[in-house]
View 1 (cartoon, helix red, strand yellow):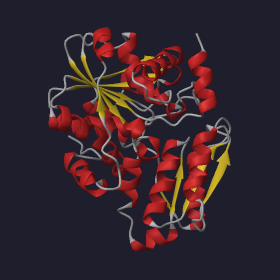
View 2 (cartoon, rainbow, N blue to C red):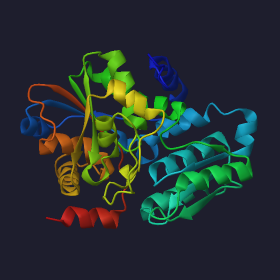
View 3 (cartoon, rainbow, N blue to C red):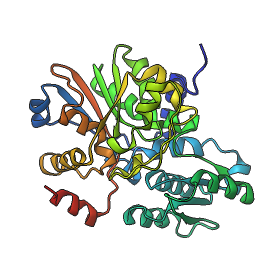
Length: 327
């Protein structure tokens, strides 16, 4: 059996490494959610994580392992927003330069926050590109080579994957064994790390990933048994506008994830509205993927203990208001 990129020991080490830097986010319950789904639902609120998303876990875990030479040269990353902010903040905390490659149409709040974390940091900047015509990975590799910086991708890196898995580890360590764990899927860093953690802590748990309907590359990949590449999907879940699973994340998903379901943009908006009205939480569209699968019935779980990762809360407030006003 081929060894996977990460194991439980990597996640346990990441928990120790990020302690004191990352927040131990709260687990919240909702009587309404339980009644609507017939399940006991535990929401892991990574929208309340430092910089507003789970991405801080993996970014800090990766950068904290840099050598002195790597820290001096700095880090480069490409991201639609949350990984960008996570790398910029982690680099600031660890005293190193950061260059972030971001789409021109990134949410204004995510772009402003990334630049804010870089303020006053020498040799740090945001480089913009067109997500529909340019290859962010190629841009990142070129800049890393030109500037001698270390490239940390948003999901396809063992230190990133292990860091993200600490979210599920914390959830299960707090609430006990789960029957089902629902996790959003972009490139697979979060779901792969969480699945490894979940199966170590409660081996019988079923892990299901959730993608937007327009961007179901991982669902297609599992069906075909190989990584499928798609065009950049058009969806309000901007954090899941990935074109393919990672070379490292996909084998973990194949072994540890039971399946992938999809939800529509309209179902994401309904989930956003639920969290705003019922739980007083701001959750971005991508952050609602896992919950939307449960609320919409794409995954049915009556009588089960269900963990749901709310992956982030970084959304432009003007856009947030527009989405909530939709009917």
